[in-house]
Image (tube, rainbow, N blue to C red; front, side, top):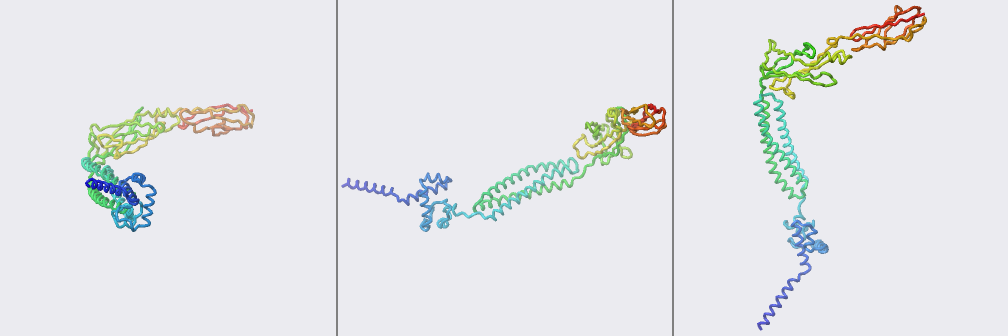
Length: 446
């Protein structure tokens, strides 16, 4: 009897296990759907989840068909298939069930409002950065003592960190613009709004604080007072003399500043135009080693020699009657001459050198030919003076005398002799310096 009891229990247990393993087709499908939903929520692809949960296309079609035919029979839980893009009644009644199927879209006007907030903040940042950049230009242009300007320069340099932080804010706003472009749901937009609200307060407070500092520096620049200093200006520049290779200029300066000229003050004279073709520039720099004192009229005079042989120029260029040289006189009251210093006082003076003052003129050479020297009465003779020349200039005029038988002018002329006899024809040429030369030819008329 005891053995029969044990056998009975064994048979019952086996039957229960068999019954437990025999699920209906609907239960198997529900189990697959649950697996698929959990897989999708974990971030895996639909293709992977269908394979992993052994859910084939037929099972999926059955599920969709069942949802359409008997929506009222769908359980109010998360057993149905999420991610199908259909917000059915069960999903609507349960906010935690498949939110991806029932999420509200982001309102377009609300998105625009957030973008306008970002644009406004970026404009405020850009305006402050421009104000910071303008400080350096304002200080450079300001007239004040070196010590005062150095103090303000330190304050401007300290704003480098401010500029860096403002640029970082710009980058952060750019990130939020990217998020705003991608947002699709109302909840996602709410998250951006919440974060932007805190960021807007932070940026606005920082801009207000730094704008106050920038305004303070601007006020300090406006309050700078000019430092007393010497201010030499050119009063006159004259050609004194030319001696061989030396051109001596007398330059008169006037001190219009509030400070006296010291031994550290210096000036520069530069020859900026020597020959237009070669473009050479010669520099002469002189320092007031012993200082200078102005005369009763507050003038300071100095003679500067610039090497250049004017006579050689006219010898090398025989057709030139004058030479113009432009001198640029620059003065800078400073320990050193700074060629880039915009505060330099300068003046250009053009001096004309006349050829006659430096080179002795050479007389021209008169020469002409006649096409015939023996002719009859009333015959015409042609004369050509193109063989005449002037080595250091040009011939300005040709004058003809036909030996009391008339006169004429021009490089080539013709003349008719009406009376028999022997005539001495004379040519006189005059060059550009007024020098002359003559040539003669005898013509026999019979």
